[in-house]
Length: 405
Image 1: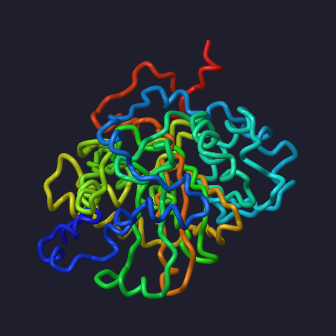
Image 2: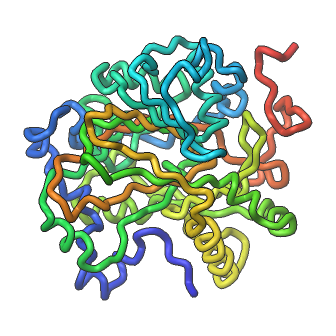
Image 3: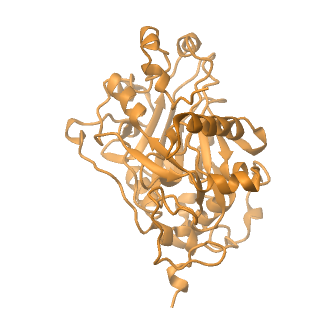
């Protein structure tokens, strides 16, 4: 069976005659009109004419050694001075995800050391859900500066954003009735789109911070997959084989959908980027698959049928096992949630399980921090480059600059 890149089916001639209604729905939104019906209109702005083609490829060559997790304290004393037990919390699963639902804990109040501990916390737990946060009311400038603590911020090529803050990516689905259900699922059984944020970039995302502005009272949640565990479940033979492979990621079909829908691009051109199929985390040294389903095109250096076989195996292995999935509940806009995660070893997808019901808007903004070029110790990065000048511990982690002589 052939492997089909994410949303590529839309451009088959037969499907153009009966296009899936859900495809391109985001870009069909008239932002200026929608702004009149949202609680936070400053976080729903279309691309301006002067922004078209303004931005270029984003790089972050020093992130591997400058990742803020290197400077975090393993006890998280700057994040939880009296211990996490001080706050109402629970783990979403033993290995992945922690939720803190306590207004006494505010990520907006963290100092530099606290933010470094937060980086290490995300690199350890993978995912955190913070509720009762004041973050959304701090304004776009605060959000931008908060994200910049962790590294350069990405500007999405074809999305809405905050007004005058292209670094703050906006997701929006307007209020509606049950009539949406038939329209969205008229030609598809599902709307899920598994991906790691901006994996098509040479320097994909390290962290994402997803801030709820408005959300349905239930549903519309985000589901996550732990790619560390997906790697651990493989046999040693397959693990070693996969460590030798590079995979081509691209935003070509995302750009095609945007162009088809009339959405202008802030960043011109399609990216085709090679990344190792197995990557090593620069702080923890853990290995994980880097299988960003929505953006992967094929395995590099093998024949088409061989690539299809490998990628279809990964679709089944990675996406179908509930034992390394968790669901981050949004619980409506009143929960004031901020969901943060490490893209380097997580996949995620939004869910549209609320469309049979009358709901208000689903409106969020996302801060997307650039990370390092994915690499492993066998093949280096996707181009076969290895960093010979890095100071590497025996366990594969990078020595923080503060600890070097």
